[in-house]
Amino acid sequence: MEHGSTRASAGRTLLNKHMNEASIKLDNLSIGYNSQPVLSGISVSISRASFTAILGANGSGKSTLLKTLLGLLPAIAGRIEMATSAGKPLMFGYVPQSIQFDPIYLLTGFEVALMGTFGRVRPGRFVPPSERAFTHECLRAVGAEEFASKRFAELSGGQKQRVLIARALATRPDVLMLDEPTAGVDPTATHAVLDFIWQIIREREITVLFVTHDFALVRDHAQQVIWLHHGKVECGAAQELLTPERLAEIFEIGVG
Amino acid sequence: METLRQILSPDFLLRNSVYTSVLIGFSCPLVGVFLVMRRLVFMGVALPQISSTGVAIALSLPLWLGFRLTGHPSESVHVLAFAGSMTLSLIAILVLAFLERRGRGQPESRLGTAYVVAASLSILLLARNPYGEIGWLDMLKGEVITISNFDLALTAGTLALVLAALGFFYKELLLVSFDRVMAITLRKNVLFWDVLLYLLIGLTVSMAVLSVGPLIAFGFLLIPALMAYLFARNMRQFTTLASLIGGVVALLGFWIAYQLDLPVGPTDVVLLGVLYAVAWVIAKFLPGGSRGSRKNLG
Image (cartoon, rainbow over the protein chains, first blue to last red):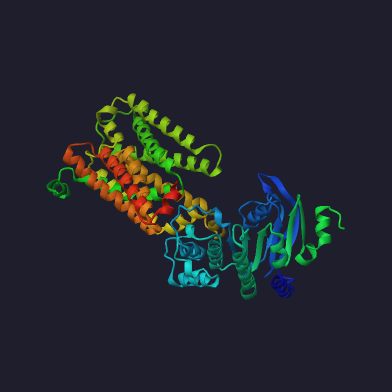
């Protein structure tokens, strides 16, 4: 816990540094499926090199928001403004839940991570040695190199998660989006994953969006919180939003 | 052994049939691997049948338009049949894949219905065709024995095209099959790569149906890939082994059929079935080996 607070405090310094550099700005955004809104009126500014948690119970619209930001779902109304990186659109590194992959594919951890480089390799070309070396570097950075030669489907939840983070890093992302990366992962591995995410933010100044329903994780690690609760969207700094008073207010219960 | 030497001799009368069988045997499993990975095995059953209905429609078209054709298939008739087979295969695969992606209804019932309707329609169309029984029915049944130089060249050319495309674009096809969302975030045109894969599957199936018939096409599409999956440890082994099994079984099947005076197609499929059963038993008793693989195939 103490460890987490220190980390969050270091992160606040980083957040202040980039306070005026919004990476993503949502302006009165409505999201949902087939023109049916799940959430409306989302107005949030996500700073560059920040750790933002998207918090909410199952069915609250967390994944819908993530999919909309990734461009997989169209926004129903409102605007999404994305900063550019050296004149190019932001590159997203997406880390899905590891359970969603079909185990039928006979791919090793390395082969899965290598897919992160495919965006830079033209169709019909082999992945050059430099990109393969970079993939090894990403795997090494997340501590996944020793099991990268094993079949992806046979890795543990935490090991798969590390490989998927390595794959997202191999895309050379500006924004790292993680969809419940600690689901099905034991507490030790969860802390290792989050420690590593903090390291990335510090070293590479990548913006991190982290979907979760785990209050404790958010309180210990996130700087900014987008909290989806009963169709409402609460935004703010984690230390301000997750106080007992604010929690009681949001849950409409008496404090006492 | 003498028979095998005879079959492999360049002077062998039925050499085109041997070459075509082996070509189909090597190529079909390569697209079959994608059908297995995308869990579209039932499509592998329905598609060859739908493709053969395309042949029947294409062969009936000139009669409906009032043209008179010769009884035995000529080169132009063969090209017409290929076009019909390819068109209907592609339409079917795109519609079925679209319905599959939407995830509504039961895929098995859709594919089962498509299979029986296509099979019945082929029979009805040829029953109304006065030339049907003269030589075209053989073509539709995939009579491996009567393969001309033109048929062989068409088969080899089409399959070379498919193999080249699969080899060149393997990483894109694998990416969109394994993780569509990742492909989208990498700004890949997922629809384009999906359509290309379906086009390659459609081309291979059409060629196979026209050369060896729907039954054998189905056998070579799926059984070698299912067998290879029992032993392969990675994608390269999976693809190579499936293709090798297909090619070798095609040659062995021809040899057995020639030796015992049996029809080639059904001999190939039965041989594949027997070998699959043997492979399954071997894999079951292999230490550790393919435990995960068998579980994944359910």
